[in-house]
Amino acid sequence: MLLDAIVIVLRETLEAGVLVSVLASLGTRLHLSLRWLGTALLAGSAGALISAFNLGIVSGWFAGVGQEVVDALLQYAIFLLLLWLMLLMQRPQPEPLLRGCMIAIVALAVTREGSEILLFFSSYLQSEEALIGAATSGFVGFMIGLSVGILCYLTLAVTLQPSTAARVQRIVLPLVAAGMTLQATQLLVQADWLPAGPPLWNSGHLLSERSISGQMAYAVFGYEATPTAIEIGFYIGALCLLLLAQYCQRAHLQR
Amino acid sequence: MKVLRVLRRRRGGQTLEAAGLIRAALMTVALLAASMAAVAEVPVIELTIRGHLFIPAELVVPANTKIKLIVINADPTPEEFESYELNREKIIVGNSRAVVFIGPLEPGEYPFFGEFNMSTAQGKIIAK
Image 1 (spheres, each protein chain N blue to C red):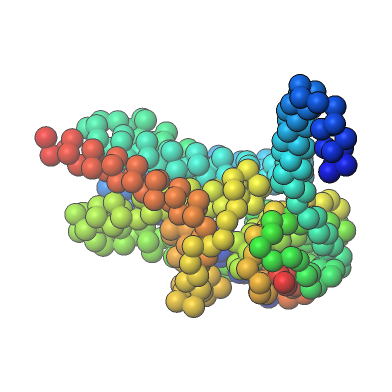
Image 2: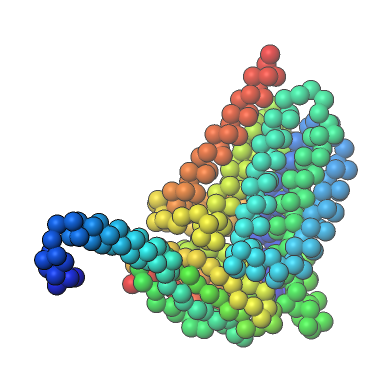
Protein backbone atom coordinates (compact mmCIF):
# COMPACT_ATOMS: atom_id res chain seq x y z
CA MET A 1 0.00 0.00 0.00
CA LEU A 2 1.24 3.46 -0.87
CA LEU A 3 0.44 5.88 1.91
CA ASP A 4 1.01 8.88 -0.39
CA ALA A 5 -1.64 7.60 -2.81
CA ILE A 6 -4.20 6.99 -0.06
CA VAL A 7 -3.61 10.42 1.53
CA ILE A 8 -3.69 12.40 -1.74
CA VAL A 9 -6.80 10.77 -3.15
CA LEU A 10 -8.57 10.93 0.22
CA ARG A 11 -7.72 14.60 0.63
CA GLU A 12 -8.89 15.62 -2.82
CA THR A 13 -12.04 13.48 -2.57
CA LEU A 14 -12.92 15.02 0.79
CA GLU A 15 -12.28 18.55 -0.47
CA ALA A 16 -14.69 18.13 -3.37
CA GLY A 17 -16.92 15.78 -1.35
CA VAL A 18 -17.99 18.33 1.24
CA LEU A 19 -19.37 20.69 -1.39
CA VAL A 20 -20.84 17.89 -3.51
CA SER A 21 -22.65 16.23 -0.60
CA VAL A 22 -24.14 19.48 0.69
CA LEU A 23 -25.37 20.41 -2.80
CA ALA A 24 -26.72 16.91 -3.41
CA SER A 25 -28.67 17.04 -0.15
CA LEU A 26 -29.95 20.50 -1.09
CA GLY A 27 -31.15 19.08 -4.41
CA THR A 28 -32.89 16.17 -2.70
CA ARG A 29 -34.59 18.51 -0.23
CA LEU A 30 -35.78 20.56 -3.21
CA HIS A 31 -37.16 17.32 -4.77
CA LEU A 32 -34.69 17.23 -7.67
CA SER A 33 -33.74 13.76 -8.87
CA LEU A 34 -30.04 12.95 -8.46
CA ARG A 35 -29.53 12.75 -12.24
CA TRP A 36 -27.98 16.24 -12.27
CA LEU A 37 -25.18 14.91 -10.06
CA GLY A 38 -24.26 12.23 -12.63
CA THR A 39 -24.05 14.87 -15.37
CA ALA A 40 -21.93 17.09 -13.14
CA LEU A 41 -19.52 14.29 -12.18
CA LEU A 42 -19.09 13.29 -15.83
CA ALA A 43 -18.46 16.90 -16.87
CA GLY A 44 -16.05 17.31 -13.94
CA SER A 45 -14.12 14.17 -14.88
CA ALA A 46 -13.79 15.40 -18.46
CA GLY A 47 -12.67 18.78 -17.11
CA ALA A 48 -10.09 17.08 -14.88
CA LEU A 49 -8.67 15.15 -17.84
CA ILE A 50 -8.41 18.28 -19.99
CA SER A 51 -6.89 20.24 -17.13
CA ALA A 52 -4.33 17.55 -16.23
CA PHE A 53 -3.20 17.07 -19.85
CA ASN A 54 -2.74 20.79 -20.41
CA LEU A 55 -1.22 21.79 -17.10
CA GLY A 56 2.25 22.12 -18.61
CA ILE A 57 0.98 24.62 -21.19
CA VAL A 58 -1.23 26.51 -18.73
CA SER A 59 1.65 26.79 -16.23
CA GLY A 60 3.67 28.70 -18.79
CA TRP A 61 1.05 31.42 -19.20
CA PHE A 62 1.53 34.87 -17.63
CA ALA A 63 5.33 34.44 -17.16
CA GLY A 64 5.02 31.13 -15.33
CA VAL A 65 2.05 31.75 -13.06
CA GLY A 66 -0.75 30.52 -15.34
CA GLN A 67 -1.57 27.63 -13.01
CA GLU A 68 -2.24 29.98 -10.09
CA VAL A 69 -4.29 32.39 -12.20
CA VAL A 70 -6.48 29.71 -13.81
CA ASP A 71 -7.02 27.87 -10.52
CA ALA A 72 -7.87 31.14 -8.76
CA LEU A 73 -10.38 31.99 -11.52
CA LEU A 74 -11.99 28.55 -11.11
CA GLN A 75 -12.37 29.12 -7.39
CA TYR A 76 -13.74 32.64 -7.78
CA ALA A 77 -16.17 31.19 -10.35
CA ILE A 78 -17.34 28.56 -7.85
CA PHE A 79 -17.82 31.33 -5.28
CA LEU A 80 -19.92 33.41 -7.70
CA LEU A 81 -21.99 30.38 -8.68
CA LEU A 82 -22.67 29.58 -5.01
CA LEU A 83 -23.69 33.20 -4.48
CA TRP A 84 -26.00 32.94 -7.49
CA LEU A 85 -27.40 29.65 -6.17
CA MET A 86 -28.37 31.35 -2.93
CA LEU A 87 -30.18 34.08 -4.85
CA LEU A 88 -31.84 31.52 -7.14
CA MET A 89 -33.37 29.77 -4.17
CA GLN A 90 -35.53 32.87 -3.65
CA ARG A 91 -37.82 31.99 -6.50
CA PRO A 92 -40.45 29.32 -6.15
CA GLN A 93 -39.80 27.26 -9.32
CA PRO A 94 -36.30 27.84 -10.64
CA GLU A 95 -35.64 24.14 -11.31
CA PRO A 96 -33.71 24.18 -14.64
CA LEU A 97 -31.59 27.16 -13.57
CA LEU A 98 -31.03 25.68 -10.13
CA ARG A 99 -29.97 22.37 -11.66
CA GLY A 100 -27.66 24.08 -14.18
CA CYS A 101 -26.06 26.12 -11.44
CA MET A 102 -25.42 23.08 -9.24
CA ILE A 103 -24.04 21.09 -12.21
CA ALA A 104 -21.60 23.93 -12.94
CA ILE A 105 -20.44 24.15 -9.31
CA VAL A 106 -19.85 20.41 -8.92
CA ALA A 107 -18.21 20.11 -12.35
CA LEU A 108 -15.75 22.91 -11.54
CA ALA A 109 -14.97 21.49 -8.08
CA VAL A 110 -14.36 17.99 -9.52
CA THR A 111 -12.21 19.46 -12.31
CA ARG A 112 -9.91 21.10 -9.74
CA GLU A 113 -9.48 18.16 -7.40
CA GLY A 114 -9.63 15.48 -10.10
CA SER A 115 -6.81 16.95 -12.17
CA GLU A 116 -4.49 16.77 -9.17
CA ILE A 117 -5.32 13.09 -8.66
CA LEU A 118 -4.73 12.35 -12.36
CA LEU A 119 -1.38 14.13 -12.33
CA PHE A 120 -0.32 12.17 -9.29
CA PHE A 121 -1.12 8.88 -11.03
CA SER A 122 0.61 9.97 -14.22
CA SER A 123 3.91 9.45 -12.32
CA TYR A 124 3.18 5.73 -12.20
CA LEU A 125 2.38 5.20 -15.88
CA GLN A 126 5.89 3.93 -16.68
CA SER A 127 5.56 0.70 -14.74
CA GLU A 128 2.44 -1.44 -14.73
CA GLU A 129 3.27 -2.93 -11.35
CA ALA A 130 3.73 0.46 -9.71
CA LEU A 131 0.55 1.75 -11.34
CA ILE A 132 -1.50 -1.14 -9.98
CA GLY A 133 -0.07 -0.56 -6.50
CA ALA A 134 -0.79 3.16 -6.61
CA ALA A 135 -4.26 2.66 -8.11
CA THR A 136 -5.21 0.11 -5.43
CA SER A 137 -4.09 2.50 -2.68
CA GLY A 138 -5.80 5.40 -4.40
CA PHE A 139 -9.00 3.38 -4.60
CA VAL A 140 -8.86 2.82 -0.83
CA GLY A 141 -8.47 6.58 -0.31
CA PHE A 142 -11.30 7.28 -2.73
CA MET A 143 -13.66 4.82 -1.01
CA ILE A 144 -12.96 6.37 2.41
CA GLY A 145 -13.62 9.85 0.98
CA LEU A 146 -16.73 8.66 -0.83
CA SER A 147 -18.08 7.03 2.34
CA VAL A 148 -17.66 10.27 4.27
CA GLY A 149 -19.39 12.16 1.45
CA ILE A 150 -22.32 9.71 1.34
CA LEU A 151 -22.60 9.85 5.14
CA CYS A 152 -22.76 13.68 4.97
CA TYR A 153 -25.35 13.46 2.20
CA LEU A 154 -27.56 10.95 4.03
CA THR A 155 -27.34 12.90 7.28
CA LEU A 156 -28.43 16.12 5.57
CA ALA A 157 -30.92 14.61 3.11
CA VAL A 158 -32.55 11.91 5.24
CA THR A 159 -31.60 11.74 8.93
CA LEU A 160 -31.91 15.35 10.06
CA GLN A 161 -35.20 17.20 10.33
CA PRO A 162 -35.66 19.35 7.19
CA SER A 163 -35.41 22.56 9.23
CA THR A 164 -32.19 21.43 10.93
CA ALA A 165 -30.70 20.26 7.62
CA ALA A 166 -31.59 23.60 6.03
CA ARG A 167 -29.85 25.38 8.90
CA VAL A 168 -26.69 23.28 8.43
CA GLN A 169 -26.73 23.98 4.68
CA ARG A 170 -27.20 27.69 5.37
CA ILE A 171 -24.09 27.65 7.55
CA VAL A 172 -21.84 25.31 5.54
CA LEU A 173 -22.40 26.70 2.03
CA PRO A 174 -21.30 30.29 2.79
CA LEU A 175 -18.28 28.97 4.69
CA VAL A 176 -17.23 26.75 1.77
CA ALA A 177 -17.81 29.59 -0.70
CA ALA A 178 -15.88 32.18 1.34
CA GLY A 179 -13.08 29.64 1.84
CA MET A 180 -12.83 29.39 -1.95
CA THR A 181 -12.14 33.12 -2.21
CA LEU A 182 -9.50 32.91 0.53
CA GLN A 183 -7.66 30.12 -1.30
CA ALA A 184 -8.04 31.88 -4.66
CA THR A 185 -6.66 35.10 -3.17
CA GLN A 186 -3.71 33.20 -1.73
CA LEU A 187 -2.97 31.81 -5.21
CA LEU A 188 -2.93 35.33 -6.67
CA VAL A 189 -0.52 36.37 -3.92
CA GLN A 190 1.64 33.35 -4.82
CA ALA A 191 1.55 34.54 -8.45
CA ASP A 192 2.56 38.06 -7.30
CA TRP A 193 -0.65 39.46 -8.81
CA LEU A 194 -1.82 40.63 -5.40
CA PRO A 195 0.47 42.15 -2.75
CA ALA A 196 2.07 39.78 -0.25
CA GLY A 197 2.21 40.66 3.40
CA PRO A 198 3.09 39.28 6.79
CA PRO A 199 0.54 36.86 8.32
CA LEU A 200 -2.04 38.55 10.56
CA TRP A 201 -1.83 35.76 13.12
CA ASN A 202 -0.62 32.20 13.59
CA SER A 203 -3.25 29.79 14.88
CA GLY A 204 -1.07 26.79 14.01
CA HIS A 205 -0.64 25.81 17.66
CA LEU A 206 -4.44 25.77 18.14
CA LEU A 207 -5.29 23.95 14.92
CA SER A 208 -2.39 22.69 12.83
CA GLU A 209 -2.93 22.48 9.08
CA ARG A 210 -1.13 19.13 9.20
CA SER A 211 -3.65 17.56 11.59
CA ILE A 212 -6.71 15.69 10.33
CA SER A 213 -9.04 18.26 11.90
CA GLY A 214 -6.94 21.00 10.28
CA GLN A 215 -7.30 19.29 6.91
CA MET A 216 -11.05 19.01 7.41
CA ALA A 217 -11.22 22.69 8.36
CA TYR A 218 -9.29 23.43 5.17
CA ALA A 219 -11.73 21.34 3.13
CA VAL A 220 -14.81 22.97 4.68
CA PHE A 221 -13.88 26.62 5.04
CA GLY A 222 -10.44 27.05 3.47
CA TYR A 223 -8.70 27.17 6.85
CA GLU A 224 -5.24 28.74 6.90
CA ALA A 225 -3.19 28.98 10.10
CA THR A 226 -1.29 32.06 8.90
CA PRO A 227 -3.53 34.17 6.65
CA THR A 228 -2.47 37.59 5.39
CA ALA A 229 -4.53 40.79 5.53
CA ILE A 230 -5.62 40.66 1.90
CA GLU A 231 -6.79 37.04 2.25
CA ILE A 232 -8.84 37.85 5.33
CA GLY A 233 -10.19 40.94 3.54
CA PHE A 234 -11.46 38.84 0.63
CA TYR A 235 -12.82 36.20 3.03
CA ILE A 236 -14.83 38.71 5.07
CA GLY A 237 -16.00 40.52 1.93
CA ALA A 238 -17.18 37.24 0.40
CA LEU A 239 -18.88 36.17 3.62
CA CYS A 240 -20.74 39.51 3.84
CA LEU A 241 -21.99 39.13 0.24
CA LEU A 242 -23.13 35.55 0.90
CA LEU A 243 -24.90 36.46 4.13
CA LEU A 244 -26.58 39.37 2.38
CA ALA A 245 -27.79 36.99 -0.35
CA GLN A 246 -29.15 34.67 2.33
CA TYR A 247 -30.84 37.52 4.12
CA CYS A 248 -32.51 38.60 0.86
CA GLN A 249 -33.61 35.03 0.25
CA ARG A 250 -35.16 34.61 3.70
CA ALA A 251 -36.78 38.04 3.60
CA HIS A 252 -38.25 37.10 0.21
CA LEU A 253 -39.56 33.75 1.44
CA GLN A 254 -41.16 35.29 4.51
CA ARG A 255 -43.05 37.82 2.44
CA MET B 1 27.83 66.99 -7.59
CA LYS B 2 29.08 69.56 -5.13
CA VAL B 3 31.83 70.65 -7.51
CA LEU B 4 29.30 70.99 -10.32
CA ARG B 5 27.02 73.09 -8.18
CA VAL B 6 29.85 75.42 -7.23
CA LEU B 7 30.95 75.75 -10.86
CA ARG B 8 27.43 76.54 -12.04
CA ARG B 9 26.83 79.07 -9.30
CA ARG B 10 29.63 81.13 -10.76
CA ARG B 11 27.80 81.48 -14.04
CA GLY B 12 25.21 83.73 -12.51
CA GLY B 13 21.47 84.04 -11.85
CA GLN B 14 19.24 82.68 -14.59
CA THR B 15 21.44 79.81 -15.72
CA LEU B 16 21.74 78.68 -12.13
CA GLU B 17 17.98 78.61 -11.68
CA ALA B 18 17.34 76.69 -14.92
CA ALA B 19 20.16 74.27 -14.20
CA GLY B 20 18.79 73.74 -10.70
CA LEU B 21 15.34 72.97 -12.04
CA ILE B 22 16.67 70.55 -14.64
CA ARG B 23 18.84 68.85 -12.06
CA ALA B 24 15.93 68.54 -9.64
CA ALA B 25 13.82 67.01 -12.40
CA LEU B 26 16.61 64.62 -13.38
CA MET B 27 17.15 63.63 -9.75
CA THR B 28 13.45 62.91 -9.34
CA VAL B 29 13.42 60.73 -12.46
CA ALA B 30 16.57 58.93 -11.29
CA LEU B 31 15.08 58.34 -7.83
CA LEU B 32 11.82 57.06 -9.34
CA ALA B 33 13.72 54.76 -11.68
CA ALA B 34 15.84 53.51 -8.79
CA SER B 35 12.81 52.78 -6.65
CA MET B 36 11.05 51.02 -9.55
CA ALA B 37 14.17 48.95 -10.16
CA ALA B 38 14.14 48.07 -6.44
CA VAL B 39 10.55 46.85 -6.78
CA ALA B 40 11.39 44.81 -9.86
CA GLU B 41 14.56 43.39 -8.33
CA VAL B 42 13.08 40.50 -6.40
CA PRO B 43 15.86 38.08 -5.35
CA VAL B 44 15.69 34.89 -7.41
CA ILE B 45 16.50 31.55 -5.79
CA GLU B 46 16.57 28.20 -7.55
CA LEU B 47 15.54 24.83 -6.21
CA THR B 48 15.87 21.57 -8.15
CA ILE B 49 13.90 18.36 -7.86
CA ARG B 50 15.89 15.30 -8.91
CA GLY B 51 15.23 11.68 -7.99
CA HIS B 52 12.25 12.83 -5.85
CA LEU B 53 14.64 14.90 -3.70
CA PHE B 54 14.90 18.66 -3.27
CA ILE B 55 18.38 20.00 -4.05
CA PRO B 56 19.45 21.80 -1.96
CA ALA B 57 17.27 20.50 0.86
CA GLU B 58 17.95 23.67 2.85
CA LEU B 59 17.67 27.12 1.30
CA VAL B 60 18.79 30.23 3.14
CA VAL B 61 16.88 33.36 2.06
CA PRO B 62 16.88 36.96 3.30
CA ALA B 63 14.15 37.62 5.90
CA ASN B 64 11.39 40.22 5.35
CA THR B 65 11.95 40.16 1.58
CA LYS B 66 9.78 38.86 -1.22
CA ILE B 67 11.57 36.04 -3.08
CA LYS B 68 11.04 34.59 -6.54
CA LEU B 69 11.60 30.88 -6.11
CA ILE B 70 12.24 28.96 -9.31
CA VAL B 71 11.58 25.27 -8.89
CA ILE B 72 13.18 23.14 -11.58
CA ASN B 73 11.71 19.68 -11.86
CA ALA B 74 14.47 17.59 -13.46
CA ASP B 75 12.46 14.38 -12.96
CA PRO B 76 10.25 13.10 -15.77
CA THR B 77 7.34 12.81 -13.29
CA PRO B 78 5.20 15.65 -11.88
CA GLU B 79 5.69 16.91 -8.34
CA GLU B 80 3.69 19.22 -6.12
CA PHE B 81 5.68 21.79 -4.19
CA GLU B 82 3.76 22.34 -0.99
CA SER B 83 4.29 24.08 2.33
CA TYR B 84 1.81 24.74 5.11
CA GLU B 85 4.16 27.25 6.73
CA LEU B 86 4.69 29.20 3.50
CA ASN B 87 1.04 28.79 2.40
CA ARG B 88 2.20 27.62 -0.99
CA GLU B 89 1.04 24.83 -3.29
CA LYS B 90 1.98 24.30 -6.92
CA ILE B 91 2.23 21.36 -9.30
CA ILE B 92 5.33 21.25 -11.49
CA VAL B 93 5.01 18.84 -14.42
CA GLY B 94 7.99 16.65 -15.34
CA ASN B 95 11.05 18.26 -16.95
CA SER B 96 9.85 21.81 -16.46
CA ARG B 97 10.35 24.81 -14.24
CA ALA B 98 7.87 26.84 -12.22
CA VAL B 99 7.80 30.20 -10.51
CA VAL B 100 6.57 30.53 -6.93
CA PHE B 101 6.68 33.86 -5.10
CA ILE B 102 7.25 33.52 -1.36
CA GLY B 103 7.54 35.86 1.59
CA PRO B 104 8.25 38.41 2.93
CA LEU B 105 9.13 35.96 5.73
CA GLU B 106 9.92 36.60 9.34
CA PRO B 107 13.21 35.02 10.44
CA GLY B 108 12.66 31.30 11.03
CA GLU B 109 12.36 27.90 9.42
CA TYR B 110 9.72 27.00 6.87
CA PRO B 111 9.50 23.32 5.92
CA PHE B 112 8.25 22.33 2.46
CA PHE B 113 7.64 18.98 0.79
CA GLY B 114 6.78 17.30 -2.48
CA GLU B 115 3.25 16.09 -2.02
CA PHE B 116 3.57 13.37 -4.65
CA ASN B 117 6.65 11.86 -2.98
CA MET B 118 6.33 12.83 0.64
CA SER B 119 8.65 10.12 1.98
CA THR B 120 11.72 11.54 0.20
CA ALA B 121 10.95 15.03 -1.07
CA GLN B 122 11.44 17.14 2.05
CA GLY B 123 13.21 20.44 2.55
CA LYS B 124 13.12 23.73 4.38
CA ILE B 125 13.64 27.40 3.80
CA ILE B 126 15.58 29.29 6.44
CA ALA B 127 14.86 33.02 6.52
CA LYS B 128 17.66 35.05 8.13
